[in-house]
Image (cartoon, rainbow, N blue to C red; front, side, top):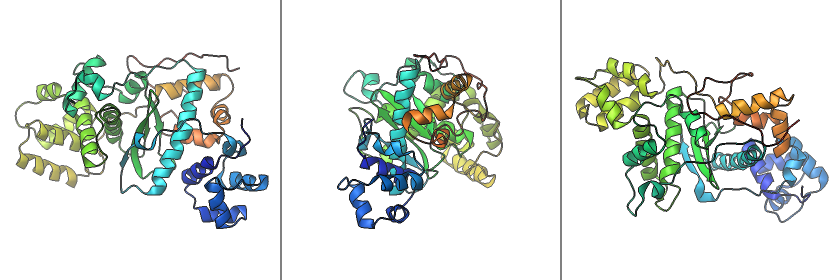
Length: 373
């Protein structure tokens, strides 16, 4: 490993830990000006200063000397923020993404993992005119051999298609989800501190971004991009033909609550989908939204019967390492971070102890590339 101090690592560590430059400078007993110069690569810190950075920011010292070889371009991110996205949250997301990319590299070197099979929109189109989100969702379903049946476990399906899914629920709770492509490998971060129905929708939303907004048909960031990803998610989770074939006559609020578990979506998402497909009139749609909101369905799912979707890939990986007498520590040492940082990346995605999650058909089965013992 290079022993040249990597100032970009200092910026990433600052953002991931949510610290200010002033507080780090004070802890390292250097001036704000000196810290700023180090942060910009204009000055090289002394060993004792690096040690202070490592202690203050809770990273191994080697972290600050590891060259950043993998970093997604600035325009590769698709953020879905639960509130106005602060610069510190965006910085934390970008810092975490670097760690995730290095973890992905280690995983690919260590295990035989599924290759990416997430087409970009132009690959689905086969021409020069982009598809609407609904058509794109239907085309991807057909390409993946899903037909129009409900998706039992979306997280494991996406892993089987080569998408690496991590948790953002540790240091950046303000972000719902974000995604980017690490070369050919799609990466998705989820905030797991939400209802299970909303986590599934966030997964489908990010899948929409990866399909619709990663290639030559990319559109400018903003409301249009978010609405397109929402439309894709709704169509992917609730295919038109399956929804229309499952409803008969008047659809009451109680019927919506009965039906939503079929597609694993929130009551509000299903109500909106029924309205968009012309099943609910504008007046009925508004009345049902009011009724659902009064019963707590705008901010959660009080009657949810869904079981958590857990990562097959990460669970098998950790089971394999534990079977060899290792675990989070080995991964952490490989990418020069704390064990807790790896735990945070798997938060809510793996069982709290050993044991494989219930698996949907066509799921990832790990095999080692090399002997880890």
